[in-house]
Length: 204
Image (cartoon, rainbow, N blue to C red; front, side, top):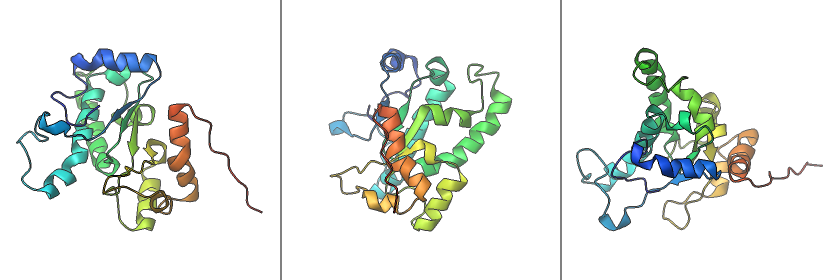
């Protein structure tokens, strides 16, 4: 599905698509694609003037879809549905989830179908393809960020090749602990797509 859409993905007109995907065990992948200019402007105020604006804000569009899916009860109605957000943004997610958890406590009467803290929906329903722009540039700081926020379970590697901003496998693997690298580089995708888990090769 395109990242840029005429309506947020929690709205009713999309539900039958998500239901069919869940019934067939298929994840929904959301990826940026300007589609020849036929899609709406990417921000509520129109088109950004500069590439720096558009490129830096792109993860916010994914997060808007996530908020809509959660608040509209799609995840509650379809417990097996998984969305893969293919253009990164997991680093944007952290402060948003703190805010959503806090506001949910006082606003849960408005959305009674959201039966648990919003953060608790992440592990079952969302995966992020790590983008080269995500998180700290320093590998040790990146690894620490992933560890402190317990993010390995929701991250997957994807190169985005041949795009100019592709992420080399070694670059991401070297920025994770050994345990997190196995999970992010292989195990999460294998589990999601029903593939055999990667065999571990024991050292001498």
